[in-house]
Length: 282
Image 1 (cartoon, rainbow, N blue to C red):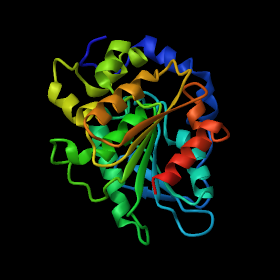
Image 2: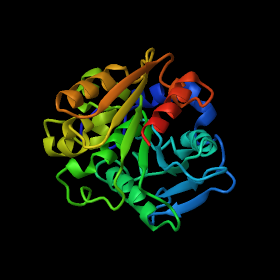
Image 3: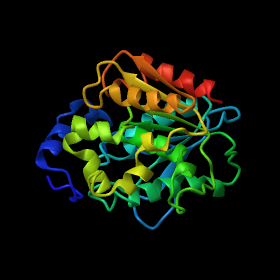
């Protein structure tokens, strides 16, 4: 595969399709929850979020849910709908964020533009308290969640002046070390496809896009990773946390029982652990 290609090859697509456990929560999964507010932050059909308020009581804060899928357009925010519903039941305001991805105008830099703009759009939502905003991302979404929490650390002035600062990030099986991910060939070259170039070709892109290159962040980062994850190995979380803590940041890893998808199963102990971590970050 050429590094400059915006698309992944057949091998990667087959690997993604082979993840059969995603079928239940893929684009044909749960429909938009009743009562969710759709908020557009751009002109593209993929530039929107679904805002779900707590089912009762005052909100604990906002959790921005960012779905994964190796940044590929065949996956969408329906992956995050069960999480958003669970969060609302637990007293959170959930902002389930859609974004342009590979095959749908995304990749470098458009996906980063969308994550920044989508979170900043929360500033214009009437009656929404954004004093606590936690990003929660799974897999590739974990990369975007931690990146969003560290926007102020990147060089690009289009991104480093957030209207809505992120107060903490939780990465569920996140792709947080691009160099290691390339060595591991995660997703059959997913990182280089997403970035539109290799690290050697465009190091400045990786400086702005790779979470591990922005440590230390000024906000807490919590990594939750299945011990049996073979899609994104736990070494991704461990590498990031080691680098972050060595630089003086507040970052931890919690290893839970299960594989890559257990962490987004709202009936699992791994999800219960994640909910507790979110409560502790308030």
